[in-house]
Image (cartoon, rainbow, N blue to C red; front, top):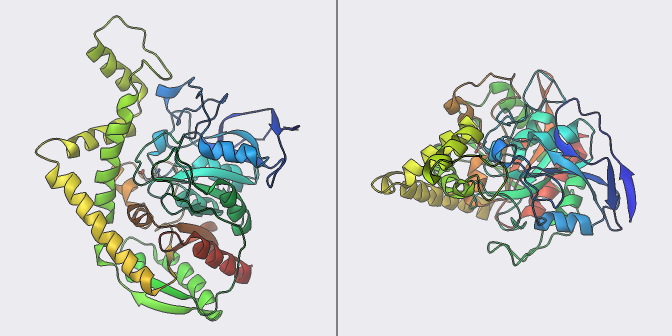
Length: 431
Ligand code: GLN
């Protein structure tokens, strides 16, 4: 065992807590400082999900990915800021203050893994883990100009990830290059019997940059209303660069995409309303000192320590699951999810990947999206991959108004290798 001292100049508020002296072992990531999103359980380090309700909570066990990081010799230097319980797209919903975008500190870093993205983009660490339920790795990666992978559902164990929406989320790697992203992915991917949805599919980092002969589907919906024209232009140029290397472009359409956002927000809030029921002020974190009845104490506690976005989503989810509304909302959302999955799978049976923008616009100034609906709309291009369980990578591909733009590469379920190879191929020709 060796030790590493870590004292980041964290002007971005990327870290919620960090170690000054970190022990590390031998292995492929020996001594590499890695930051971990604060919804991933770490023995001995606070895990708050950036919520007041979990203030002071120190998990009694490590997440599977943390065990793997430690076994790889990595130095886990700290926990990163995020939107409370991973609900958001800007990291403004953290109970511990916003994280600043290192590319322009007047703008959001994206979310919900904004702390992890800022820690990497701001050169505080070379690699970080995020989690992605509807875009939370890819959005901040795009906004901060780094690489982020949302793996295929099941490829990385969720054991020890504090659940927001189990059927949608995955832990994934974030770094400055596809090569480092792939290295971190090779450490965390693989089977874990403690996660019932875990696949037996390890990843061996052996990147192949060949673009020639690859079939790239380009859906018109990724360039439709709501996507800023300058983003469309930048992404089309990146895709043309890939075509210039001998890739074949296939124009296509995904009509069910118009249902994706609504389906996502019904499903994720429904699952959240159930998952967050366990935070009762008794078992974990902050306790309310009260002599009131259990019912009143539970209500006071949750009112006081959950932020407004979390409360909004618990209410929305409880409503969608209520008897009498279940068929109209939750069941319908599941039907839409199936349609979306079918259409994506159909396209990906004929193409190696789908490409388009990660986000419809560049990182915007703090406070720019004050109503929830406008905020939710920024997730339109990222949520389909989660609904369908597909791997999706965001790779930097130029700038608009001086801010980074992310190219999104979506593959068939289990084709994380393909997605990383294409990203690597693009990175090679673009640099
Ligand atoms: N922005 C989306 C949401 O608020 C995605 C969040 C995430 O991927 N955790 O739910």
